[in-house]
Image (tube, rainbow, N blue to C red):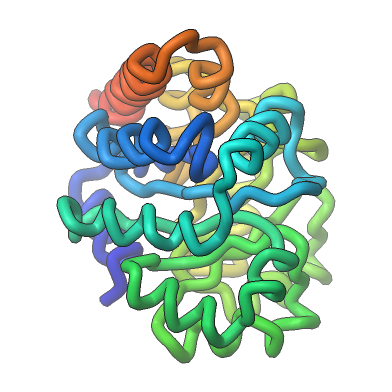
Length: 270
């Protein structure tokens, strides 16, 4: 089994959801970003999404857009992001790590080269926001042949006719975008999330993780009662933006991660 399959199976046995954290590689600098990345599992992250910086992250709100700008300003690129994964894997062989971003940097790097280097570095899966299933041959199919999970986004506007196409070839988990908007947008109602999860479960046996708009331990706990995973990104990145020193950035992200993890872990305790 892949690291993602193993992690979600373990958590199912424990009757709890996964805390899935997102940070942008190289934000605000390589060294600080690496310190955050290495610290996330100890702070309670069960799965890590690592953003690949890009100049035009069209699905992201202001917080992650600014994180991309900071990372690119610090000269972060895809090769350095893969090196960051290698350094992370030197001390952690258990935590699933997914690269998330857009197709342009991968295309520029070279698709087959990227797949080989990502697998060698210790990447477990990919989320490529702007590559629809009609283009599975571009990246999804060869990535899965190489042993990388390919995680799809589904949204409130993905109807029952479109959903099987979106889920075809998906693996690892399904990422449900709970609001029709960009990252960091307002949170969906719990009733909406419950209905969405029930609908997705009729179409797939994959774990379902919910993201967009989750900022507090209380919100994370509420989602953790309904889904298999809780994704938090913008709230963590805000601590990087607000920090005046690298140590403040690391401490702020890891402190919030620990609080979110505590909320997720207590969500299903009777």
